[in-house]
Length: 240
Length: 240
DNA sequence: CAGTGGTCTAGACCACCAC
DNA sequence: TGGTGGTCTAGACCACTGC
Image (cartoon, rainbow over all chains, first blue to last red; front, side, top):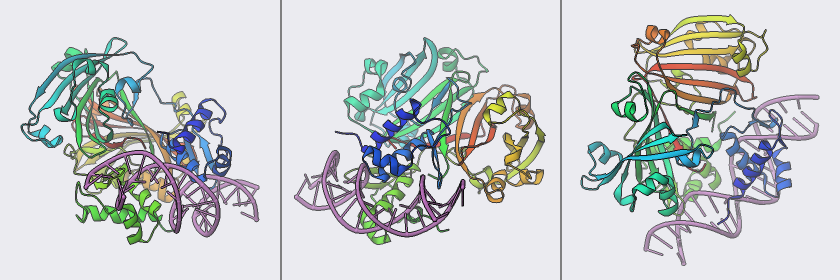
């Protein structure tokens, strides 16, 4: 199956920006010119630029043109882009990520999990606790709950490798959307034990409820990190 | 100037969902039927539905239809949607918000602020510290930095009322995009003093660098809340 | 097979901006 | 006034779904 044209165009233009062909604060060629050059309609170019704008790569001024965004001066190495669906390993290819499976069990869901994952009392879930390390330092403590019937064949090796890859590549399931909640909280015994957190170290937690494209809930999870290890970052656009 | 048609369509369909005409987990009429009924082209309906999908109101299955999303079971009252550009008062109309101006001064920017806001040494900034209260309880401690030349006429009354309204309605400036960073941190003396935080209470902080549609940086700010007062929430979509 | 959403086109008009 | 991006249309073809 081939990629959509507008994604192809977005790739080309993104590479031109990264390669320096279009420079920060400078305008790109106008949409019609790009359409002519690349052999597509103007709407297809616009769609590509819309996506690039959402990612913060360009900004547009109606009546003036489309401009390359400058670098973000407050961006840090601990910043973790929150607008993505890939697993940890795929989203941080430059980092060396190790995974320890601390707990992996098949259980019956409590009332909350029944509600969150649309399950009956007798429909089992996987209860998974994993410690992710970055350069062999504790990084994220991940607690996942998934319905057993949706993720058959799950085992420790998959969990050490990549849960998301297994769900997507092997089971051919596609994540559709997720509700994410970020909060600060006090450290628990588990945080102190696995993340090397002091008792008064704040913890940054992301809670997530994720659905497949079919609308079926597939994952409820918590990701916890020590306050000095991770930030969540995002680019927001007005009116979209 | 009139609203774009696709926004109008999105409003109509959103109201139908909220009014119960289309029910959770049930399909909407197909795009062509809606286009015929509402007197617009199918693409315009699709654009409206795309926006509603980004907001988490509906989800689509290629080949099947567009479905109404169910309620989110993990949503809480402390959840604050992070994908928005309105000020605090506009985004929480149901809450009673009071503002105390703790500090308001015109100063010269340090090196970091010069870099973040693209300013020279001699170009002054406003340094603003405000305490936002919800139902007369401390809620958010906001520290804002804005270039003086971009926001003329700023005064304490504006700050007590609404900074965003002033910038948008009075000065006719439009926010284009923002880089936002969320982190957990330990409480400072100011947090303890104004947010009634204990010394070991974690603080949830959002740092923001915002640009106008022209690409000019206009605001660098910190919003801090006690860990038990506020969460940040968002709906994310795969492939958009 | 029929029905759905996803994509793409060519052309048109509009609002906005700089000159 | 000319050029930009934003919107909208009608029509077409495709990939995917369930029957």
